[in-house]
Every structure is written in structure tokens, then in C-alpha cells.
Amino acid sequence: MSLRTTRIASAASLLLAAALALSACSSATPAEEEKAPAASTVTITDNHGEVEVPVNPARVVALDNTVLDTLSDWDIELVAAPKGVMGSAWPEYTDDKEVLDVGNHREPNLEVIVGAQPDLIIGGYRFGDYYDDLKAQNPDAVVIEINPRDDEELFSELQRQTEILGQIFDREADAAAVNADLDKAISGAKKAYNGTDTVMAVNTSGGTIGYLAPVVGRSLGPVYPALGLVPALEAEGDDDHKGNDIGVEAIAQSNPAWIFALDRDAAFVPEDREAGSVPADELITNSEALQNVRAVQSGQIVILDPNFYLTEGIQAYTSLFGQIEAAFAKA
Image (cartoon, rainbow, N blue to C red; front, side, top):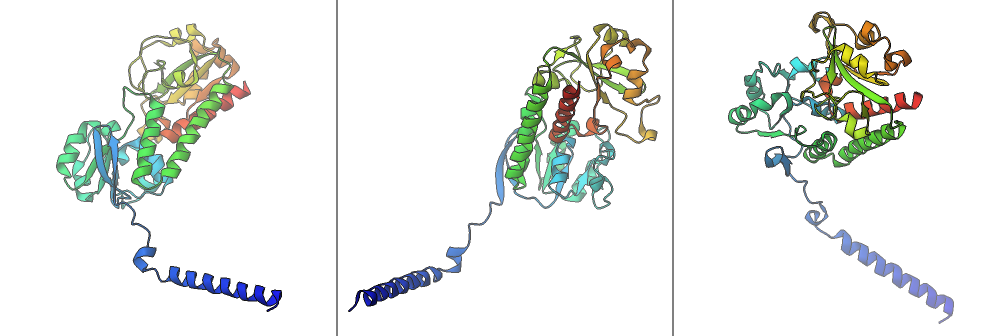
């Protein structure tokens, strides 16, 4: 036999062996070829401890405004929501008649939630006082609270919240991307800050300007330590977003290089705003007491997004840090 004939015979043998191997593989049973079924539940740790939660629950009630941007971005449908405290920030929910209205946290209609027959209720935040009622009235639903805890660093808490939502809705990669965006935004704003300019955080409502203390609170206070900002004034403040009774004269005397302002009225339609409401930028720049303040004279005033008062979630802060970075870089 020639060398050429031998090579041809060997090649044929190899092809036959490969064909037999493929045939053996294809004889596997359908059960062997199927992937393992996706988990139907996942164990998460909420603000009360470990909870077994259905994965991709079909009927979701969300009462915590800080999760709504994430749920909306992920196209999660809701069966009920507190439209009374959602303003116009989420028209995909508030304009949908299929989404039942729970009302607001002061006088919620908890029976609406029962009637919605939810699989999952995301409570907490403004609705934290109703946790026990929600559990008692909805025994077939899982009730969780994953809003940022008061005794923890806000931004790591928002990332914890997003990670949990990613586990529940099988969007862990998306959750990681959201968290990475926040880290990037904080880093960018911190690098843009010169490290010496003083900052004053205020809010406005009903035509008045209120002082927001550094560190404390759930709006602008936590931004100070995150970016290493130098406060123009370090008076004690309340742990909320309402502002403190410190006169405009004291704010003026501190002469901040920057003013960050939360306009609490801007999130609502005019008829729902506080009496005497004036847009924050107009109120601050036209204030006689603030005319000689460095921030006013140089136009270094950062007005938060009109919906920030309602949203306060991870996306809202990511956008805020981007806004701050742009303002610092421009100065």
C-alpha cells in the first residue's frame, strides 16, 4: 500500500470515529440536555433579617420611592403604588389606571394593597410605620423593607438596595452597572472639587430658605462626607429634608463659595405647591440678604433636579454627583 493510500485510510478512520462520537452525544436524553430550572425564590437580607422572596414576582406593590427609578428602568410592572407622593416623576405608573393608587403615607389606603393581591410588597421609607400592618393584612405576600437605614452610610445602602433588587428581579448584572455608575459619579465629583471652597446646602419651600446641615439627613447632608466638602456653616441640624430654622442672615454671614439647593416645591404642579412658593434659583439670587455672598455673586449655585425631593434613589444621586462635577469643573 502506498503512503498516499495509507494517509487516506487513516483520515477515513478518523472521520468515522468523529461521526460515531457525535452520534453518541446526540443520543443524550432531552432531560440531560435541558438546563437546570431557574430558582423560584431567593433569600435576601432586608432591614429586618433574612427573607425568602419569589424571583421575578408577577404582582408587585412598591411603596418606597427610592426603588421606583430602578423598577421603571427595568420595566417592572406594578399593581399598586403611592401615587399621592409620586408627583409626575413616574408617569408610566401614575398615568396607568391598572396601577392602583395607595394614596400617600399620611393617610394610605392599605385596603387597595390587599385588593391588588400582591406577591411582593416593597415597603419602608415613608411607609415604614405600616410594616406590621402590611404583613398582617397580606399573609400570602412577602413584605420587605430595603430602604437606606438611618445608622448606615447612605450611598453604600443605596447600592445594597440595588443589589437586592437585582437578585429579586434576576437583573444582577444591571444592578452592578447601576452601582458602578454611582461610584464613578462620586469619584468624578470628588476629583473636580478643589478641596477648599466652602459649601452651603439649603432647601426652599413656600418662599423661604432653610439650612440643611452637613452629614445628617437624607438629601444633601450625606454629600458632604462623600466628596470631602468644606461646610460654610456647621450648625446642628435635624435628620430630615425639611430644613432648619437658621436665618438667611446667618447663611449670608458664612459667605459660602457654593450653594446647593433642594427646591421641595418644584416636584409638584403649581396648585399643589406650598403657598408663596418661588423657584429656588429666583428666591436665592433675589434675596437681599444674600446679595454679597460669594456663591450668588459668582453664580455658583447648584439647583437639584426638580424631582429629587420625590426620588432620592441611587439614580437621583448619580445624576446629582454628575451635576456637581460639571459645576466644579466649570468654575
